[in-house]
Image 1 (cartoon, helix red, strand yellow):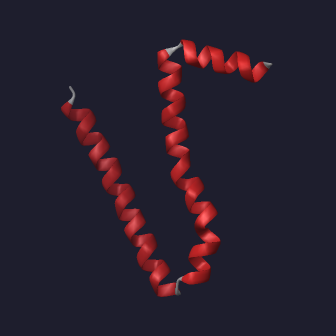
Image 2 (image 1 turned 90 degrees about the vertical axis):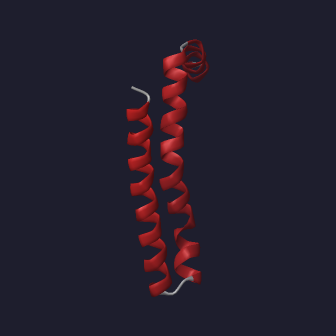
Length: 75
């Protein structure tokens, strides 16, 4: 009952629905990484795992930079 009420409030408010989608999207990347951790450590050597984490870190940094650039361009 409480969950249905919360969902109806979120659906009725555009700001809350957009915020909810942004939060869910932000949580998906770390959650997928956590779920994939056993697979990564089982199939990759330590060197390959290190390269993969370096690439993921760089991709996250570029994502942050591009987000700031896009936000800045809108103003």
